[in-house]
Length: 201
Image 1 (cartoon, rainbow, N blue to C red):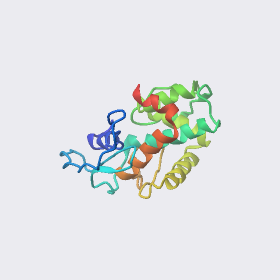
Image 2 (image 1 turned 45 degrees about the vertical axis):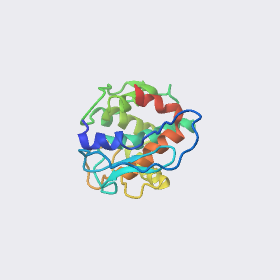
Image 3 (image 1 turned 120 degrees about the vertical axis):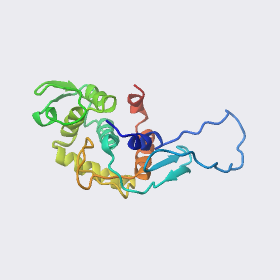
Image 4 (image 1 turned 120 degrees about the horizontal axis):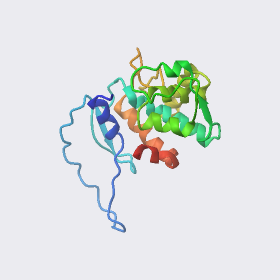
């Protein structure tokens, strides 16, 4: 289960500013003082302009917990876009995935589950077992998938992020920042609009 501080990181990762249709551009309005947020770190960013509206300790390294799955999703969506994986592809549940700790979707070892069902299990249920299965399906092994995650983080400019697993269990050196998460959340919206609907289920 996500702690409130990590949930705040996700919900404050990207803000969408909506103005009146056809309204003329106005001069920049001063940003009011941000409200008190009960999180160790947060950042609020205008999705369209990239302007930071509010932040506190946004560059402090924190354990991302299940927000790790944002990068796992990014890598899976990239595999879908490049046709290395299809939503209908059956993925076999390994014993390693079946034995995952923490939140689970309770997929059965040895069974084959369509990738789209596993994606929903990862995003909607935060299922660690579904996440590990997808990591194995895209990367071949969890270890190779984690390498892909770290390579992608560097390409996106996430300078203070290091991944040790795809699901977010506590591990030495498995850290990120609110600012890096805002970069990742923005890029998910920009790069994979066709898959954003999974986050609204």
